[in-house]
Length: 225
Image (spheres, rainbow, N blue to C red):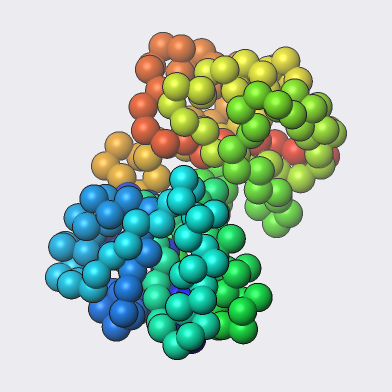
């Protein structure tokens, strides 16, 4: 009958909404990216609903099967380790399959990492593009070259062990003086925002080993001019 996409906190557990807790208590099954990680959240809120592991390595195999159950009358929720399902996390394939089979899809508003990073960056947030994670190898240089002339503010996700590589590529392709805000550990105890040029960001994270999850907010070409 229905798939409900439920955002979960990207950091502070208090960011969970009352509606999200109520929903997770009422559905028949929770599809979780990592049941161990989600188990801590559910325990914190006393949620006893059973979980099924649903992640990037099994979603192609399970999406049609789960969608058939939902179209047949079940109500399930999909959560990821942190943030909103479908935003650089599993969610799109299952949503498409449920809709294809005539089921309903509902999305609760809630936590996502890039919105807080964007609005505190000091860069224009009236128009922006979300790139998520850049391609690991194939197509990476081509994508960066295409973004060199992008006029709007750009948003990227990056892991700590690839951060300096990505910043070095920004220096080369986008320009060393391009403004950037590097945000890490959004909504967590050690939340940090490093603002300045790409060169400044490289120097900072060379001196301070990157830790945590990162959101990169990069100045568009129009604003730079």
